[in-house]
Image (tube, rainbow, N blue to C red):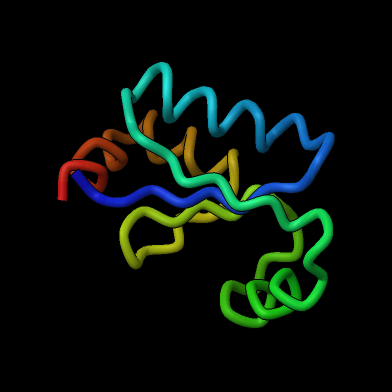
Length: 85
């Protein structure tokens, strides 16, 4: 299985939903990194991904986006193959 990393911030409902979906529905171990107090890392990720909002979800080395992209990939049948790599 691919390593799953979710960057989040406190009080982010979409972050909580993405983590819960990955853990409970997809049975994935998820490394959760809280960016609430790490402005420098957050700006580094903005430059890397082009996304300013959290969650920032990585599967392996692939940045898939946020919650909306995660659910879209699931609906399109694209998520399971990526997770199984």
